[in-house]
Length: 331
Ligand code: ATP
Ligand code: LTN
Image 1 (cartoon, rainbow, N blue to C red):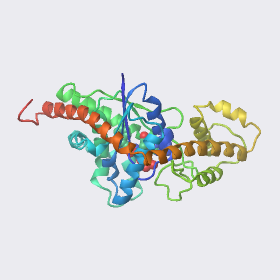
Image 2 (image 1 turned 60 degrees about the vertical axis):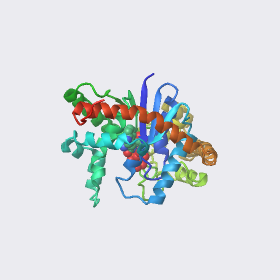
Image 3 (image 1 turned 135 degrees about the vertical axis):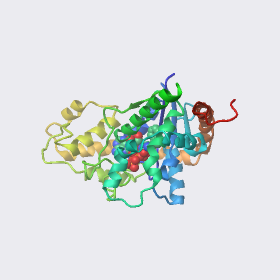
Image 4 (image 1 turned 120 degrees about the horizontal axis):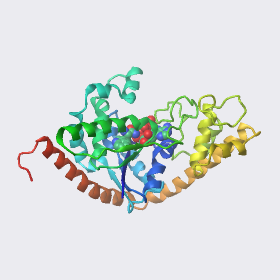
């Protein structure tokens, strides 16, 4: 069985972009692949966090994994810090990453360009830690949204570099970026991706948003004056974004099908259909989220997942340290 791994960094509440770009694929693939889905809590602290809020976000993230349909009996769900090998291989990967490579990572470059002050060293080196997260498990595929593709490509470069230098250590993984929904845009500014750092709170639909509020965000989404439901991300970014949301939430319905349904109809009608699809999905997720919270399933899932993940991760770390010549007593 081929293996798949991915993680989410819950620096805030999970949103529809996280669901459509990443989480729903974890669920889809859990039968076909051996799935590792973890909560990247080490990555969370690359930016300042309030401890109470962070703890709540981490718990919510696991609850949402389960509520969205990840099943601990089929997928390995775990917290990054429960498997110590992540931090240790992360340091080793950092020592094999060139500063030039880190300087080219767009997420860090964007933050620098915005003139953000006091960025942490952890934020700068986090692609090396992400490489360790992945390479510890030799996955074949890493399902991610478009914004993370560059990091998986760096992971591939690092794996090849270390394999050439020390002998075959890592399987070289491939990013898996879906054709539709890999970059859901902000509803209030379709030139930016939907993100938890949205200050206006109008462009981002959180999975735990009140349904009325979510509907309102869809109904006030920025569109255009072309008066035509047509898929053209360049010239009609707002409408195309809503079409991607609708298609992703309705079994990848083809864009031509959506265009045909709304031909000659106003944007109001179209937005109502998108809002209905979004609210139906949120309601379903939120009902299950409430069940999960009161069931004790979170702790059980994390314990089981960490046990399985640790076996693979510890073995890989030992192999790497030995190959590098870092150990004195070799087993
Ligand atoms: P944010 O910008 O909201 O902070 P992020 O990408 O920094 O998100 P995560 O929450 O860890 O951090 O993202 C988890 C997964 O969700 C990643 O695979 C990421 O590519 C995907 N993702 C995030 N935002 C979007 C989006 N707007 N559209 C599609 N996929 C997304
Ligand atoms: N960097 C990712 C989260 C993440 C991840 C990973 C994703 C950390 N480690 C390994 C896939 C594989 C983010 O910020 N979204």
